[in-house]
Image (spheres, rainbow, N blue to C red):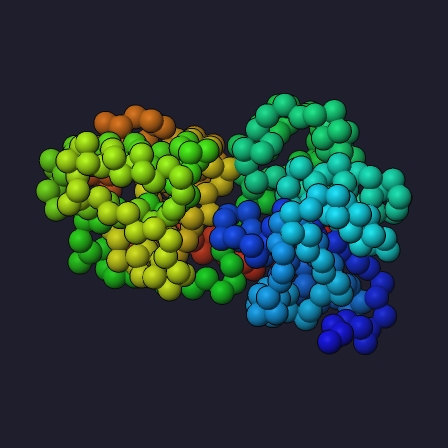
Length: 367
């Protein structure tokens, strides 16, 4: 069925490139869904949007209805075929005025597209660790040709500029936002919640920097101060057996529970009923999951690293040094015993709502 935009003469087009957008539940796909929605909601007559995803093998019509109101002019998926992705990007970028890259690995393709379409302006969303490193020659060239780079935190902006200096104003901070459908509404009153600490993350070998092991190792000290404290861990991955072994080695079989993957409704219930959300990670570019916890009035425990200190304030949680197990234990005990002002936590979540994000993106894109 043709998009409603087909009835309007198209005068401007924007192409969004995504490593994946609906194929997984990770942070990058969730943020790119918000970008897609904002692009489709700009509301200017004659503005069309196209979507290209590398890893997705199909796109469900329900996902499009929820995340692309008004519809897309065109979309294409590549089922992890990189050569197909490059060819499709060059084809779909023809006639476009803007191209937004959802990952730095796709930026050289945008640079090439501009060579073929000189009026094309391209942008990059810089999420975190993928730009905290030296860049290849092709990446540096493409970074210098970008109209703007949207960095999810000031920390990420600083790390990117460390490895690729750019003119002033080229790299700007555009914080992540909660999805417009994400309800900011307090859960069970903290004063009546059991002392449950909730962790939500991937449990893979490559993601050990998330600090799940450190929270488990902190539990004996936490339980010494708060005997009925429990740790519930949502997530799955190839590091799960090692973490389960650690639980048994520490004698925490009755204190630490691995829940595996849980659907959104169950995850919401877990967030609404815990007393503390914890993820003392070393390499979070921003930490969207902290906002999702705050949106239910939950205080957060994070590491003093990456972009997390830009998200967690003294009114919404506590910070500990990464890998400092006694420090993490002390912070968790203090957080579990603190009489938090849930309205202040909810207010912090509101600061990162969808509408301010969309307004700032509109200005940055000159739409």
